[in-house]
Image 1 (cartoon, rainbow, N blue to C red):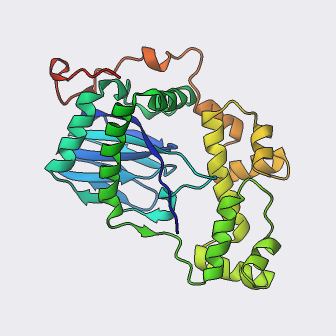
Image 2: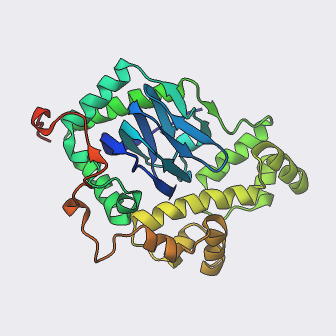
Image 3: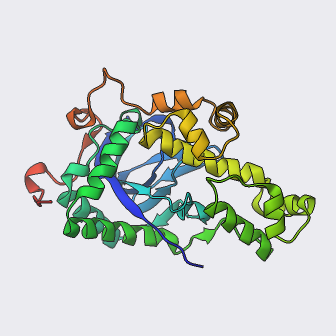
Length: 314
């Protein structure tokens, strides 16, 4: 099976926090990697709490709701990673990636090199409500595509090395026991923006419709249409954040029967309407533009002092 992984760095830096790294219900269209250098904190998910310990690397997948909790001193390197989906598909979403692995001086040195050589990709503000916005995300994506070749190779080289540490113990989420179910999953990925019927999928799987639905749910954990809608809602989130397309246009592009059906499905999945979701992820006219934001005095940036940072030209 051919797999393709297209990643880019949105932000990277070093942060020192003093009991004020506390953010509720964070949910972003990009993944996060942390390397803890000092202190302790934790990340609360819906089903468990992950302590953040010194000397360890942590991975938080995209679109996973979580809360950050810190009641004492805490220092860490952070890396925001965006995966460009191929044909509506995310490679990382297929994997069960460990949330915690042991770090070493190698990973720490790579992060130092990345942050020292690229001070322009530090977060201007540590509040997710500031940088989880449409304008800021779009600007970061544009910037990542506009950097010079040498810088791009260096950044992506470090990123892929760090990701590889997590992939050593990663396993596929989707492990169909029946080959035919696997073929329907592949068909869904390649035709996600088209109309897909359960009858078509059943024919691909060489099963009756009812038997196919039972086998699919037993293997994947949900019905075929629930799986298709989940994938389409994920794409809709990205469209709402990264484009100016209307809700109707997004609905049509993802082959929902009509805008009302799409809005109801979106609200059922995320608890808010598409319009509300977009508004919450946009920078308001009264808010400062991302390039004019200044860091909060606390938590402050740490790591190498500004005069020690090497200046590279893009």
